[in-house]
Length: 66
Image (spheres, one colour):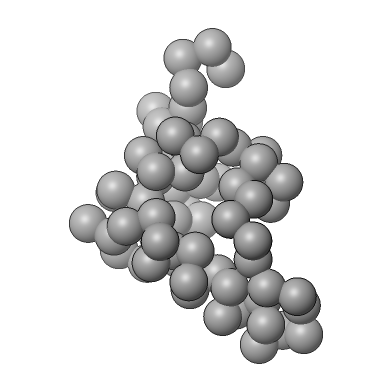
C-alpha cells in the first residue's frame, strides 16, 4: 500500500523533471478526482504508474455520487 503523500511526491518529481512547476496536491485540477478518490486509489497502488493505471482503467474508487 502506498500513501497519497508518496504518490504526490513521485508526481511532483516527475513534473519538475519534465520542466513543470511541480504538483501542488490539486487532485481535482490534475486528475479531476476528489481527495477521497485519490486516497482510495493510492491505497491500492504500488507507485505513480500503478495509481495512473487504476485511475485510467477502473471505476470502483469513484465517489458514490459520480
